[in-house]
Length: 47
Image (cartoon, rainbow, N blue to C red):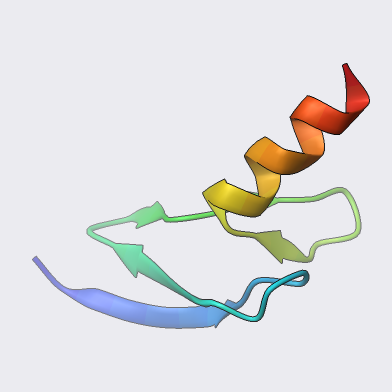
């Protein structure tokens, strides 16, 4: 299983990797990345 660096979270600057074809983040409409922790925080605020 290869892990390839793809970028940083737009909010917290955590490194984000592609792991065997799966991006460990959420790609937003503006093409920026949010790690799952920041994405979950955003969803909680919107509800």
